[in-house]
Image (cartoon, rainbow, N blue to C red; front, side, top):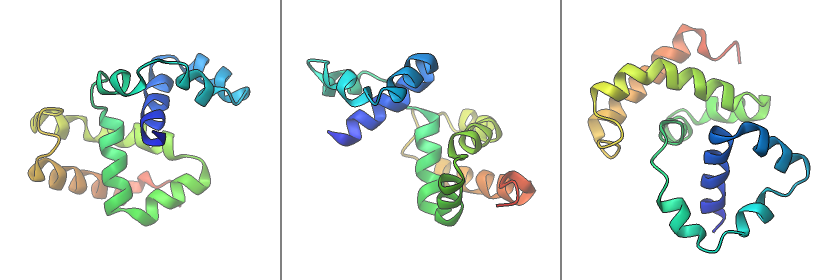
Amino acid sequence: MAETINRLANALVRLDPALYIRLQDGNDLEKYLDGFDDIEALSAALPPSPLDFLEDVLEQDFRRHWLRFHEAGIIRYELLNICAFCETTLQEFGWPEADDSRLLRYAVITAIDDYLQEGGADGL
């Protein structure tokens, strides 16, 4: 259930950042999302997010950078930059239909590595 709420929270921040901030300020996000009758169906209806996919790759294959970005509070910023950097790669490999493709994953790993080598880590 916590994973579903986290996925919905991530979708909410992309759809309506102002509502997300208001809910965070009052620590009411979980209460807000728990208010939905069928939260699993709501979550399943959401399309896959390239941000989620890229964060998964970053977390699994670049763990040290992922941890530093989290600790510095810039993970969302870096993921948006990585998403822009990987946009062409995602399109070329047919995202989101090919989200389980090993070739897509390897291409994204290469792109993220290029991003980090070009200074995307902002000195972290």
